[in-house]
Structures are given as structure tokens and as C-alpha cells.
Length: 405
Image (cartoon, rainbow, N blue to C red; front, side):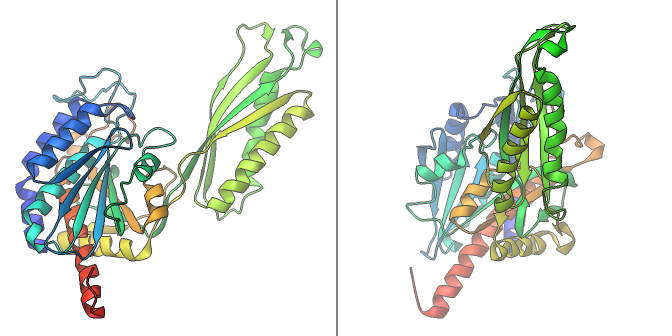
């Protein structure tokens, strides 16, 4: 079966590339993926896969029933693009100015459609059901995953486990990165408004300067990470924007700060948010001002389950050789796939797509982000293999117990 899957994945590579390029040319932003959804639905229907649209607003789910009823496995890809003007110079660059698939979601959709093509061709050897989950709005808080879950993406039939993957130029083509346990960070958005008392720039003693207070708050907040956190606990607090004032000689009444908190531990995440507010307010009041802290809660920590990650790792090793599968460190990026993993066991991994020879080295979220499309062979085969192997293990366990679903 391993050889068969890999052979099919190599055979359909030109089709997967064609699909990816068509999607890349017509990117759509979060919850605006109408044309994208229509395109995907058409491709799934052509494969004889039942499609449900309007899940999570613009998302959809394809359902492929195999020859048995031994379980249900979910495979997920995200659909939305980023508000970035593309600078790759590719012949199939975005035609929607100011919008670009700079995070590889076009590749994720193409590889999942590739897996759908492989699995539909092996339907008679599939002992259960595969759900192909195409999700909107991964890039925009609060994410599309909660909406998909709310609209039943994991139900009817109930998903037993879910798997997903992300393209990356941090790994070369041919390498896949896995990690059991926490893989990606939580992500909360922090908005701070600092209040002072405006006045003339030449008479600061008659005012309360919110710009100076803001500078102090930025520095004090770093002590939350350096002095209030366990040094062995990964965490990042970044203030990414400061806005205040209108002229060189005017002290404004207020200043706005915004930033992000990333953690790998949900308990520390909760405590850190409390400490951030306490530190900012006390600092502002200590200089005669005040401040308001607002938090937009983002994605939780993405925690891969041990068994499903082991299955994915072993599938990659069997398909591409032991050297292709790597255990990688966690990273502070965030992914709303984490919401699915709070509901059912599963795993999320990296698909390497870096290639210096073709200039595929820029990071995701860059206007110059390119990938090596040869990576699609690995991604499509990996998804298909994981789905089959998972269902076979459920089937074998059921037979051992003398049970059938």
C-alpha cells in the first residue's frame, strides 16, 4: 500500500500543481473564500466525493465512504489568504491586488485535493470514512476552526481523529517535521490605551505625558517574561505598534499600544494576561496617568496527541525513508488547528518546501514567499497514508475485540 500511495502521488503531481496555481492566482481573505469554496467543491464532486457547503460560513466538508465502517478520520486544509501585495514575480502570481497566498494555504488545499484523488482511487481498500475539511479564516482571530466545529465539521459522522499539515521553508523539500505534545503557541492580542493629560511640549511639568508612560510600560512589560515566568517556559511578549501624538511640540492626551502574547502552556497563559494588565496599570498610575488593557483571546496552544503523532511519523518514514521524518522543536507561531485537537485526538506536522536553487527560501507571511512544488508529492501521499493507516488500525483493533462499528 505504501508503494501504491507514493506511486499515485507522483503520478498526480502535475494535476496538484495545476490546482495550486489556479488557487494562488485567485486568493481570497478570511470568510470571503466563496470562489475558492466553489472551486474545491467542483474538484471533490468530480472525484465522486459527497460535499457539504456552508460549514463555518464559507467552509466545506467532503465525505468519502470506504468499503467498511471502522472509523472516521478527518483531514484538514485552510483556505484563506493574507492582505499582502505579492512580489514573487511568478507567472501565476495573485491577480487580486493586495491579497496573496503568502502562508501556503493554496498548497494545503492542493495537497488535500491530491490526497482526496489518491483515496478515492483506493476506496475499496478503505475500511472506514474520510472527511476532507476545508476551513476558512485561519489567519484572522478568532479563526475559522471554531465556526467549523460549531457547524458540525467533526460530527455526522463523528470524527475519531484529525490530521493536518503546514508547508514551510524552514525545512528542505523531502523533509517532514513532527512533534508530539505542544507544537505551536497560543496567540492573544493585547490592546493598551494609556491616558495622560495633554499640554505644550515646552511645559511637560504642566502635563502628564502618555508617551513617556508608554515607553515605561513597554519596558516594564518585558519583566513579565524575564522575571515573573519560569525561565524554562517558552513565552514571547511583543509590542508591535505604538500610536500617539500629532506634532513635535504637543503632549497628547493618550497613546495606543498593541501587541501579542505567545505561550506554550495554558495555565501560564492565563496568569501572564493578568500580570500584563496589572503591570501596565500600576506603571501608568505610578507616573500620574492611567491605562486600559483589552485582550482579544486568540488560538490555544496546539497540542499533538502522542499516538496520532507516532502514527504520522511512522507513515512518513515508511513512505519516504527514516531520514525524511524529523522531530522538530516547538515554535511560537500559532494555528487554529489547535481547536480541533481540543475536541478529538490528532496531529499537525510540517512539510518542507525550501529550495535555494529556485529561490524558495523566504518565510511565510512574506511578499516574496515561494515554495518548491515538488513538495506536493510528499504532502498528498502523507495525508493519504495517514488516513488509511489510522482507519486500518481502528479496523484491526475492532476485529481483535470482536467488535464492528
